[in-house]
Length: 307
Image 1 (tube, rainbow, N blue to C red):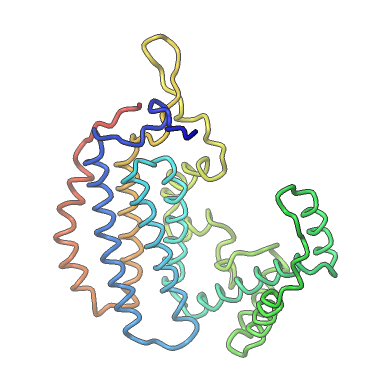
Image 2: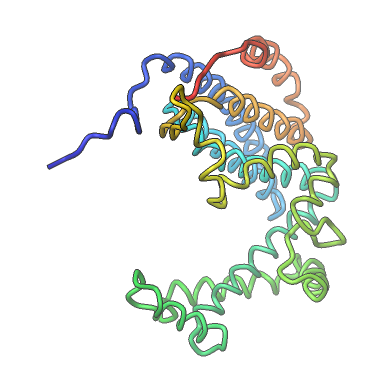
């Protein structure tokens, strides 16, 4: 026997707000669409060097995350989109820092940081190391893991060798020294911590003069990421002097999430035009048209009640 969802708990069809949610989603789609052209323009320049791929990959991740938010908004999964919005903001701050200055060194720092993260994980997979033995013991306690013997994989050995070889390349020698110097002072440093950079996301936001956004938005959505927000905003009073649990797929915050998503994308685009300054006129012409729809989204008060 198959069960349908209980409509009062999970209404999969919400005809009363469908058109509105689609309009929010379409606006996000429009700005994401423009971002795909930015990616295309960048790739057409055929820039060489490992450092040139990192800004492009950050932009790609930003676009993919925003696209996911659009899909969630369209389907009224608004609360679920808040964790993606937090991820989006972190990526935008990272891109802003990457492109602010010294982009080559910062991009190489990111690559070295990733290589070290991978090597630390590979060490856990190696049953001959103390860390690996501890990791294997933890695996055995997990009922979902049946076979903790992972180090026999050819792919694992190949990936480990690749990371080690990368760190030995001359282009990364200076950054590798800086990583080790930073790691001696900060356990598990972030990539942006190298060369006396910010130590954490809060310091990164402050460095970029985005501290207000961090405090209000990034901290505000931390509960959605860390599963501590199961209570706040999930109950509302009814006319019986008791409380009701808010439905799943509640559309209430769809407008504010959509506005924030667009704003974060605009932040990333303005930073990225350092890479493609010759396309600024294309951006200006596009934005003159886009701004009309965005202003309507920002300025019109939509009434979306708890359900």
